[in-house]
Length: 265
Length: 234
Image (cartoon, rainbow over all chains, first blue to last red; front, side):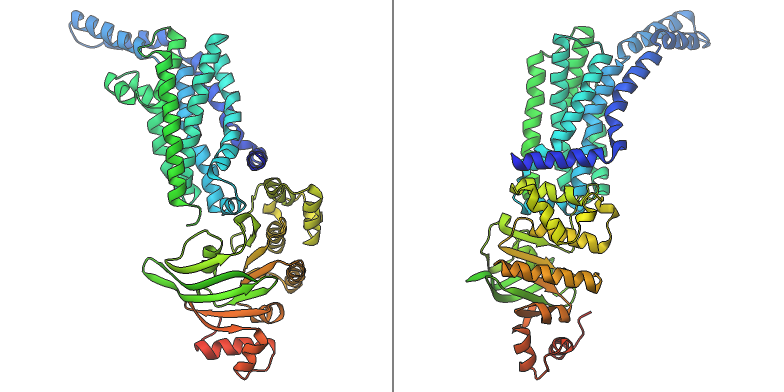
């Protein structure tokens, strides 16, 4: 417990000493707010319909095109809170955690912590705890921007924090695998993009949705959509189970990577 | 009582043999020096003894648990965004040490005025002293020092020698690597000379000099090394 507290405080001080790094915990909810306010769905559909209407095609084809495309567009228009929350929890946090841990490896700080008897799980809880703590406030902001209150807020926060836990553990595994911060960035970004953007593409394509069904970011998206639109093809308990199963599998991955890679290059 | 030992230890990295049949023993309360040029295998020996890597074959033992070992390596491993004191506080909390002891150690290494200075703003010598403070913080049974005074000015280096001697008086075993012959002669009770992964000579500095017909001066231990290897230390 002493060690967990020590690592947590160390990470909190290091983050506090670098206030720019805190912006990312604010920017995604604020983007959701700003983009949501800017997005004029009806205006976009009207513009597209106007464009089609100018095409030199028979009217019945134009009518079909306009109704088909605008209909699809209305269905595919993503909710900005869902989108930004998925990007934040699935994409933003993975490189953050990977960078913190790979920095400790690159500077050999982790070696000294390990020599002092700090276990991998202790280190992960200490460092990840700070990211979890800060992400809690981001998730609260998302919840307010998305107008989730009462039970909806509880469900949303549960989903967000489960996804945050998944990303922290995955980012930690990537951080341990990387021998320096640059390598961590190179390794974490493609994985983060795949996990963060996948669910957005899944909204437009059933095949992608089926493939992404097993990933925690997709389930966060499913839960957020359920809270927004009141419909979901996946029961809540199943979505949460998938997310926690993800966290468990990623935890095992972290332990394996730590054991295999160790802390000395 | 034997504090640190290695017997017939071999280690290769990617087919390149860095340690060959390394055997030595150090005793409790002793300052033991491992001499050799860069690339001789000194750090590899420390990494094996501190359980960071394993050897390919042979036996090795340190009569202390990981948390009873103090470590000062070439890479300082400091948390650069934290202050000098905050760096020590991390380990103080891990070991459950009272704050008064931490500030006392910081004072001993002459960093009390720099306690709140961020590591990034410390000079090389101050960083080195902070690393030593971290290594001493939990009163280790065995202290491994890898090139403890490299790139330090003579005054700072002398201060570190005093601290090392104080620690020996308190009963700790000090295992240091160096390519500084003067340091080895003045500080160490016994030394081994390592060349291309093999031990080529061992004993008290004075005995080694006498064995090779050299007068006991700081220059002569280096002379012995050159005579044995046909090359210099740098």
